[in-house]
Length: 214
Image (cartoon, rainbow, N blue to C red; front, side, top):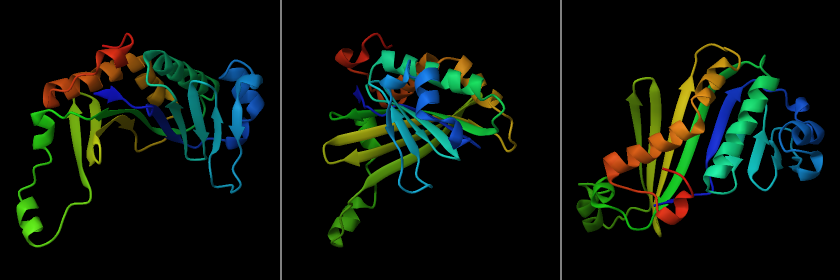
C-alpha cells in the first residue's frame, strides 16, 4: 500500500476570502510572497488557489482546503503548521467542521480487502448481461470521540482507500473545534489510519513510502 499525493485538512466555516491575498498568504503561511504561486479564479464562486512546493491551499467562502503535494511525513507536518497559523490568526471565524483526510492506493489487495467487493448479486447481474462499471463502498465508523468515514473503490489498476476523520458542530463555535483536533497532532490521525487499515484489512504501508512514518 502506498500513500497518494492527496492528504488534506478541510475546515468548513465562514471565511473572509478577502483576507487571503498573495501577500498575506506568502508572509503568514509560505515564508515569503516569492514562494507563492497564485491562481485567481475567473468566476467569483470558484476557489482562490495558492501553492508552494509542499502545500496547496484552496480558499472559498465556505471552506479552506489544505492539501499536501508530496506523500511524505514532512509534508504532513508542514500542512499541520500552516493550519495552526490560520486558526490562530483568524480565531474569530465561525467554524462548523474539520476533516482530516488520508488517501492510499493498493495494487495487490489482501483477501480481507477483496472480500469487501464480493457482492452476491454479481453472478446474476452477469447472467442478465450487466456488468459493474464502478465498485465503491462507504462505511461510517465511530471510536470514542473519533468519527471516521472510510471509502474504498476498485479502480482499473487496483484499489483506492480514503479515510476522513471529522468533527462537526451544529452551532458555530469559532476556531476552537478545529484547534482541538489539530492540538492532537496530525501524527495521531495518520497513525490511526494506518492502524485501521492494518487491523481490519491487513494492509501495511510500503517501507519505501513511510520515510519515518509508522
